[in-house]
Image 1: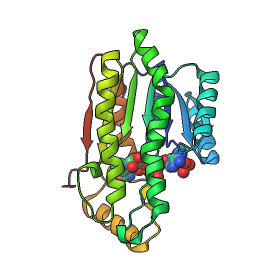
Image 2: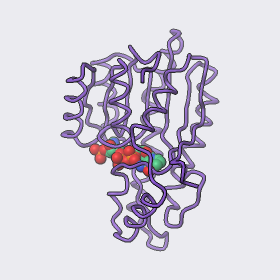
Image 3: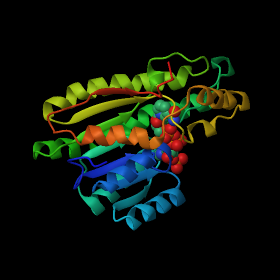
Image 4: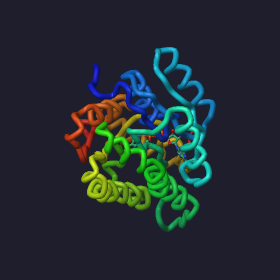
Length: 253
Ligand code: NDP
């Protein structure tokens, strides 16, 4: 499938080392965008950049931790030096660490809030001037946040993860109100079950098996299917803003 308006764009994709972020980076590059890939695992990013370049695309590996101010500042500097200003930002970096609240896993609460909420804000803030500048020049400019259906549905043990995703959904609404009048589009995407590494970081065998069981029962989207939605959004004429999209496996209620 080919999408209009993606060739010549300059994109930043966080969480590009795996899953949805990786698929988005591959698809945007295949459509002719220059793509900066952000995540912490250098070897993953290097391998992906090699794959994209082998297919004729343009990509840059930028090792960065979205929870760290200095790391994000350095990433922005590298991206500007290599590619100039950015006109498409996809916030996909995230962690899901379920636990009963009684366990008081402050370490995991902090990791989720720092990555899923403050990380998204840190990256968004770092590129806001780029997006506003691109829009002022009459070019399409997009902020795409990967929230989750978990922003709306209650799962026991997922209180903090769900709260971080509800925060992203709410934040996206407010950012749209702030950026829209300046012609910057904001899109909040809420996927359902998607087959990625997300559940691999759960440190309770029981809770990890519970996720595997749910995925088996209702099936899952592929990362490429979510990436297709991101590419569709970015490829609309610049006055068209798909602001909120839920995308679920058909059997997921
Ligand atoms: P993955 O675990 O495959 O991807 C998460 C990515 O985030 C990895 O590339 C990881 O790379 C990166 N990341 C994690 N922490 C940081 C950090 N501190 N700094 C920079 N990058 C970081 O899972 P998904 O692709 O599924 O997750 C992507 C997004 O999709 C998440 O926000 C998730 O909440 C959301 N989502 C996922 C669903 C699913 O069912 N899979 C459903 C709904 C939403 P590295 O470790 O190298 O840093």
